[in-house]
Image 1 (cartoon, rainbow, N blue to C red):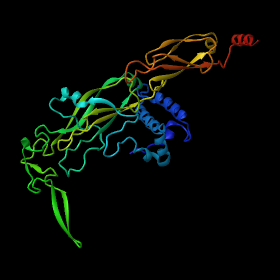
Image 2 (cartoon, one colour):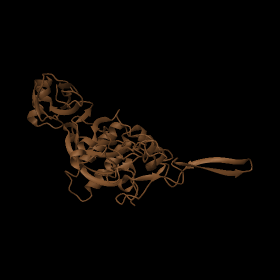
Image 3 (tube, rainbow, N blue to C red):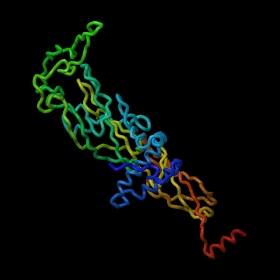
Image 4 (cartoon, rainbow, N blue to C red):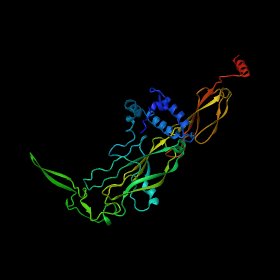
Length: 371
């Protein structure tokens, strides 16, 4: 296994580098090694290494853990807590509805939801020592998007590998769904044993090993699922990424996790979006920020310049006497609002190019102005 390089070394920054320095280094390297532009054999590997380094160092909590423990300090980030679902990075997950409705036309039949896909983070499969319904596990998956794809949304195909209830036995594990009372526990799901100690006999109750706490066992095990009540299935399904999505956003598909037990409901599927930075645009909420350079003569005399926006290039007026670092607002040229109609704005900061070299004629003209 190849040893990971130091994240600061990957980005070419010092360990005391500011957040702005880290972001600047990432943008430069990401632009250089992006597979869409760099066709070298190792470009994709380098690009992924750069993204991983930036992901760790751009987050204050992850960076602190990395500085203290190295690569091991960042390995625990992103997993959900045991016993619960996946919590969104930026607020509550964006509810995408019931994934069973999306999959119904594709898979057909009574699914009751959809099962596993990606990584199983637990959060539902508790002890079987009870006949009560047990909710299925939640599942988390990460999807990588380009900057524009997140802004304008898109339909993507994802591979869904899941555990669903066996249709042949309706999840009972018994052929034809025929069950019988467990002889070992008499249908109680638990057995009582007395253990002799120096203090006398102690009564102990434990889950019945024969029926696994259900109180019933199949008359004959289902041949399809071999008595487990579940089957694994993998399909491709098309989902829609909403317009205005952002980095770290979590989409929740209800009933998109693993099948439950004892009639318990399905868990949920959570998809976290990982969005690339853009080489030109800086997004802040629904607004876009961009810097442009203009000649000093345009700043003095005014004029029009072409400005890039996520909607395409537009012409923007520069007033006479514009000062360095002046900021102009382009109304409704920002990101589509995730909830509701309309768009954010774009803010354009003007940097003035002062010529470093002058021809004789230019120098003479500037000297005349100086007088």
